Length: 395
Ligand code: TMP
Image (cartoon, rainbow, N blue to C red; front, side, top):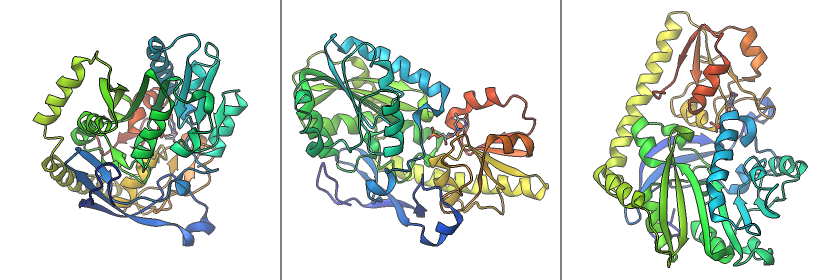
């Protein structure tokens, strides 16, 4: 793929093989028409950007059946409430606020009572509908330069644009940043948080890589990308969400008050070689080792006659199951709370998805915690489970 920012061709350094749509949970009669793509990753050293070489069209992933609801995690709801609180310092009582990829409105809900001009852009109809039902102003369209032009009262007049776990989904970053430029007021703030490259390398949580996650950002890459568009990265805040994320605060170039966090993190990233292909090659080796280790572990459970299920039919689990070739010969089922996934089968490996009742009634010996990023919340709920929890990452 050609990088939209530097116009350079990407050279993949690793392939995860054929992958289906990570959130494409499907019915049995759709198995034969399932879509697969070759999931390769590359690294653009000029801007320090880790990215997929190719990816399915956004419309294939974000449509009327998107099966992920932000509000499905109590911890994430609390996180978004605190996130929203921390942003109120950027706002006046009449400020306009936009969220990119506003999902079911979990985040914007924290603003609608105190601010009149709040707007979410959400391309997936089912989740957008859920937000609208709660009176959270939502447009069921993609956030891009062409679409935002229609919101005249927001152009050059929006004090806060936010996003969470969304910017890494957007193939055309140039178009996205130009849309932000059209909307943001002179002293406006663009804040977004995304899974962090440094955390993924540290934990070898390669399951962060899937069709929707086109980029894995670092402070280096975000700083270099936005510099090219007359913006400046003024602050960063590490987050524990999604196994390690980073919150980025962006202002227009003329903004003077830059925090030391940015400078310090840039130095740490340079020391860790997060801006160099070497760290990627090291990560590649670690992924291959992780794959061998988890297959060995699961096979050992099987040889001991243990039953195994998965917990959390996450998009991340699609990468693990397909990369490690783990199917129903090893894992009986995956339990999940999401109505849209229950009764269907996992993408690619076709493991049945069951509800929580099934999990409670069919005590399994070992549980692969695919939703490892929600470990505290889940273990708290499942105190009565007497079997063994395991995962490919230390949590
Ligand atoms: P995520 O890792 O992308 O946030 O996806 C989490 C998935 O795990 C989602 O399908 C909902 C599911 N889940 C449960 O089944 N039970 C839980 O307690 C939590 C927190 C999530």
